[in-house]
Image (cartoon, rainbow, N blue to C red):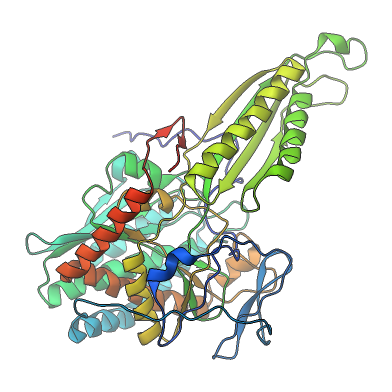
Length: 509
């Protein structure tokens, strides 16, 4: 059987990505969470400040920290926190319906401890076989085989995507459905420089641990894990959403490694992003003999590029626009008849993204008008901002602080992820967590590729895996808790009108 191909490969190629976590910004700066005080109810007090060119060392009781210094690179160095006043601590008023049964907790932790060596091997196998988006054949095969071995019902080549897959396990009748995502794709030339091997492994660990607890304690429910291809610009989750892959899930969880404070996790948001591919078509002519007969497509691209550069002066500090110029068969003595711009626009929310994209498109059209070129603008799937479910975030934060000697903060990222689209459709949570890195070795660098295979990174990922597995089990086993999760999602929906995309863009709230 011939499977349907994914969306056509965009002209930008695999190297320009709207996806994934590049580095943390200090947008959404709020206090760290440590024992014993924090309160998610104050989340709306978040700041939208961006701090650039600074060096901020966050204190760490473990004697090490991952610092953000001049330009936004996190490095592992000793040091002291700055002398300015810390923001206020938040006091918890968490009125839990009930905690998880301690025996359930022990089952999850014991299962993941027993699986630790197998999960480490799985992560390293994927790390040593990096594959680009929609080409994750090796990861597809080893992960589905692993889950099949652990009793899951597996659907390979899921939803018409050759490297997507689905694995599920059910216990009893009438229970809720917990969704988990595992990303698999790497980056061209630098491999798993965004740590998707850790994401893949963590998703599998969550799924197997939850399945073991459901069986051992006779908890009705279903665990569904999706292998989601092409996060790095291909929008695999957006495609899967459109094809109904998430429709039976009550909640969905995943995590992502990044630079950051040692032994910490973060529940901040990410930017919404829109990729744009612009083709200018002109007419060739001899550049010296009869240039007036030509229509210069390169001039159009340069004009648009310069117009957008001028536009940046009037953009809000949290908006981002970045792009490149490309062409084919160019030579100095021929007027170029083709030029291509590949651009990505980012904003902290859909509303600002829609406005920003419209302003950029005017620059593209103006350049075509000025030079007489034809212009064609295509847009890939929009990546929406993460709308973290505050109840799931609170539960996860409580768990990792109390059980795994971690801290929790609300730092956001200026990068983007297609999981943001998932958070608009159902209650979901996507924490980031710190792994050790070298100087200037944040996401999408060769140094982060090395970091993603270290034992220290694996240990951090397993702690987060345990926290997410326990959070997911609370969703499945605690009716009152799940009602609180749903209520928070509905409140967020009321605050943000979820309009349908138009030409690849989402209109804002």
